[in-house]
Length: 300
Image (cartoon, rainbow, N blue to C red):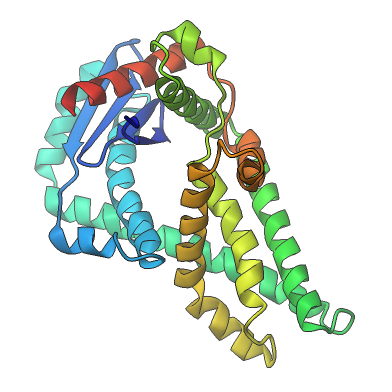
């Protein structure tokens, strides 16, 4: 029988793992203790119906991931560099505040941050490509130039943030997350030694998805006009859900065929990007990831 599919996400000083109905985060506190945060993934009938519709389900998955992921990131951030002796104070601060309002604000900020980032990532290359419209005049040339600038922007951004100490550690936990899932999917025992032997790259990673939006966007934009310029801007904005949906489907496809000799190469570009978005974790970080995953396994 196929093993169940688990997803995950790196958080500040920890890792979150999720099944279809449960999410668990483990973080390491400043006193070296490991603390957990668990929550159920509510099964809403209308959401499940949307998840069965190709293209649309990718957008639903991204929004859902952003909402739930923000809650786990907030848990980790609240406790980052906070003395465990302050836990009572942290809980008191939450009680004093309007919890529902804070949660809703966090969700809204998370979704808006994603949308603003996506808009900027989509439109900035369009404006840069337009600067060269007098030199590169063809439709194909403009779309190609736009995609190249988009790829450069993506790589430079990821490389720049990976140089900061906090993001570097976040990327190490990202690597630990992948190693644990690869170990589990390979049927090996989840020990630090075994986990460290496995790759920090994985076909289902969101980093691959981001790269695929560039590649899929290149193909989609070939079928829509680039002139006049305002039409180009409008169709890029209107096609964001389409590009996201198609990229999600392509990501799922590359995961299904990752063991097929020829087709497995389709996922290689995404894996190459993960060389930037994941770092080699140390044993302590792998231990946190293992504990998070084992706690999830006990609940499913």
